[in-house]
Amino acid sequence: MTLSAILAGLATGIVLGIFGSGGSIITTPALLYLLQVEPKSAIAMSLGIVAITATLTAFQHWLKGNVNLKVTAVFGFFGIFGTYAGARLGVITPVVVQLTLFALVMYAAAWKMLRPARPHRSVGAAAVIGEDVCASGRCMTHVAVHGIVVGALTGLVGVGGGFLIVPALVLLSRLPMKQAIGSSLAIVAIKSYAGFAGYLGAVTIDYGLMAVFTSVAVAGSVAGTQFAHRVSGEALKKGFAVFLMLVASYILFNNYL
Image 1 (cartoon, helix red, strand yellow):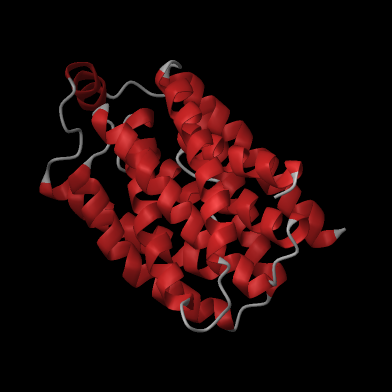
Image 2: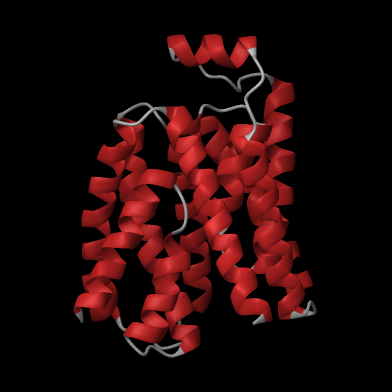
């Protein structure tokens, strides 16, 4: 691989480790434009690379106690149905509409995450003593609904599940930022494996290139995860919001100019 591709692999892992999302938005362009991989193959390989990297990164977060397994299971399970329905709708939706909607959703999520947080006694107390902040049946019902809605949006726009999952877990399911990042990684991994499996046999996969790119991305994810654990949840929240706005602006710029 070229130096640019290696740096892209490192960036993929670092972004996943810090923010719990964003891998595919770096990996796919790198495979397409730096390594000249055919588009459909690039999409499939990106899913495989992100799946493996997210799995290993999620495991690191789980060791730190930052993966809510119950929320991950419910969100992931119901998200599969929402993603399928959104994808079917995406087939007949113009690309310009899909990407514009995706950018607007990211702007909205960033705005909400940059707003001063209102005191929330149950979340604050649970975060301090390390308890599950989403254990009630009502909360899990919300998680299921969010999984369907976020899955539908993810399927509709075709990329960026983590960009939608992290804000949903923080703003709607009331998970602390670090736990939302770890749980998002596990959910992203589940969805990516399913997506990669859907492409098997239909497109050409360069497994050698995938292995090298994934190895570099995993190394970056280790560094990103260690950095994330040294930074406060509030700082990560603001950083993620800024990252969302930058990506949304990039999408709109390429969409209309």
